[in-house]
Structure formats: structure tokens, C-alpha cells
Length: 441
Ligand code: ADP
Ligand code: MG
Image (cartoon, rainbow, N blue to C red; front, side):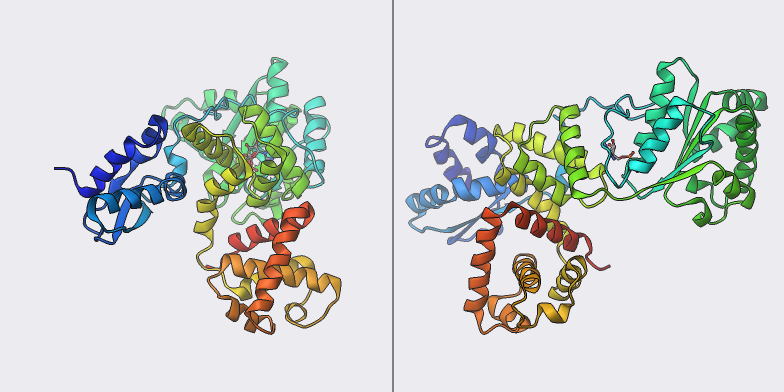
């Protein structure tokens, strides 16, 4: 015989529409071991389904229990698996193929690259190189943090030249090394040399991995010189400037510096927003402005997160058959942020808010009515309340406020601002994100 939990779900089936049943209720498993007469526990496959069931069906479930057992239990919907949701979306429209071997990603083009203050210089340099390869800047050395668009930019040059029928090689240090070893052991070094020294454009991604690999540094040095003597263009990327790459021969460092060294900085909020719009366009995901702004505040500097987030939103929205509203986005991405939030303290929040707004932590805790300080204090209180487990009285004590009603009053004020003042809300979300990411080791 079915467990009581199962019987209740079967009864529920008759009361709700078939789609809801298939999407949500059917996904639940009754936890017989943990449940008690006054506590019914179900497990859902992910947070979204859990939330949905909690808000839409928990009351009905409790009521059906009462009919069957005469006891109305608390219904608790917990999450079953801990596998990250990103691995569970097979239905993502991905028209982007990752480059494999020497293939370029066709969507990595100048048109698809969003230019802002953070990457303007590298963009112009790459563009000039694509117009006059081998002439203006050789090599072009682009460096910057993970996910800031280095590979995208270098491949943009590659795609331009490829479309002109030129020979383009895109490679990583590892691939270069493997190729070298293979040709060496097959005694086909001539072919290796032909390949790398006769191309029109050589793109070497993440050159920092050359560090401490002496034999391949030697080989790369000769490849480099051969290409440059023929005025063939070389573009190199790295996570740091040539000087800072440890375990790298001096002669290579000086060659890397001999053309143009261009950095890419983390994008400003506006640039992030534009990049998201661009990615939506490419991946055919429809998001309204509010959601785009929200996503922009969630991602830190690594632009690579964007595609993951878009896929996730899109997959969930298809799964649930609903539009991607701001509430929906918050709900889906909450889990993602929650994971980052386990170690947050008020001190950490104070440090970050103070630093970002250029105010001393002691000022935030003071009684000053100066508008900048009030602004910072509001944000700090709001974040402390929403990101840490501290109670209102604890917050009152920390911020030197009279009592918990003072905190509650401030929270109301902030929620009002969050609703009516988009700039304020974005600032809060941006800082909230910074705090989440800065969680100490
Ligand atoms: P990096 O090589 O610096 O680690 P990538 O070039 O792989 O970074 O970029 C990561 C992702 O972010 C890619 O999908 C890329 O298209 C996107 N991206 C980064 N910067 C921009 C930008 N300015 N405009 C459009 N897309 C960008
Ligand atoms: Mg890269």
C-alpha cells in the first residue's frame, strides 16, 4: 500500500490541473523516515520546485492530511539533491560552439564585443591589428583577469583574417606543447615548423602557462622570431603582464613587451549590462530591463558567468512554462547567491560598504546625519539584515541604534527606496553581490 504521503499526493491530483501535477507534485518524494504525524516532509528535486510547492500547494497538502488522519501537519518541502542546478539543464539553446583544436568560435567577433572604458584600449589595439596585421603592433599582448574577454578579442582578429582566406592558428600553451612532443617523437619536426612558422596569424591563449616549461619556451622563442621576421602577426593573452610572469626567460619577456601590451579591466556596471544584452541576443533569450539589471548586479567580474546564468534562467523558465520576471530570476538565482553567503559577517559588510562608498566604518556606526553617511548606513543595515543571521536587536546594538524598532523602521525606509529608486536598488544589489563574493577563506 502507498504511504500516507503518497496517498495525499494522489488525492491532490484530483484537485489541481494536470500540468501542475506533472511539473511539481509528481516530482515530490515523501520522506517516510523523517515525517511524523504532525510533520509531513517531502523532498523536491530542486529549490525552484520546492518553492513553488511551498507557496502554491503546501496548504492543500496539509488539508488533505487532515482529512485522512485527523491531524493537520506542518508540511515541509526540502530539497533532495545537492547537485548544482546548472548541470541539470539539457534544454538550453546554445548556438555557440566552443573552439576545439585550432577552430575559432564564430561568435567571437568585434561586432559582438561590447566596448567600455574597461576594455576600450585592448579593443582598439585588436581592431588595428586586424586591419594591418604584422605591421602596427607585433606582438599584441593582451592581459587581464578571467572572463574579461581576452580570448574573445584575440579570436575576433582571427575571424577577420580567416574570412580573408588567411591561415590562422589558435592554440593554447598545452596544445602547442603536445604538438611539439608528438612531432618530436614522430621525427616530423619539419611539419611542426611548417605549421607554426608559416601561418599568417598565430594566437596563443593564456601564455602564463609557459612558466617554468623550459624546453617549450625555447621552441616558442624560435617560432616567435621566425614569425616576426616574416611580419606575421602574433597575438598573445595572459592573466598578467609579461614582467609578472614568473619562470619565464628574459628574452621572451622582452619580446612580449616589444609590440603593444594592452590590459583589460573588469567591466563597469553599464558595460556588464550591455554584454548581457548582447548575450541575450546571441542566445535568443528574452529578458526585460529589470531582469538584465539584476543579473548585471549578480555577476562579479567574470563575464563568463553570464552565459551560465542565462542558460539557467532559460532552462527553468521553459521547465516551469513561465516568463522570466524579476521575481522569477531572483528565485532561480537565490540558491546561487546563497551558496556564496555562508560566511558573511557584519564586519565584512561594513568593510566592503565603507571601502566602496569611501567612508570609514566608524562613521557608519556613528550618529551622523550627513547624507553620505546615512546612505552608507542604510545599505550596511539592510545587507546585515538580509545577508547575516543577526536579529534586529543585535543589529540595533551593533549600529548604536536605540532598539529593534529603530532597525525595523530603517528597514522599511530602505525597502521603500528599493522599490522606488532604481539607482539605489542597483547600488544595494551591487554591494550585496560584492559582499557575497568577498566571503573570507
Ligand atoms: P577570458 O579569455 O578573458 O577569460 P573570454 O574571452 O573567454 O574571457 O570571455 C568570457 C565570456 O565573456 C565570453 O563568452 C565572451 O564572449 C564574453 N565577454 C567578455 N567580455 C565581453 C565583451 N566586452 N563583450 C561581449 N562579450 C564579452
Ligand atoms: Mg581566455
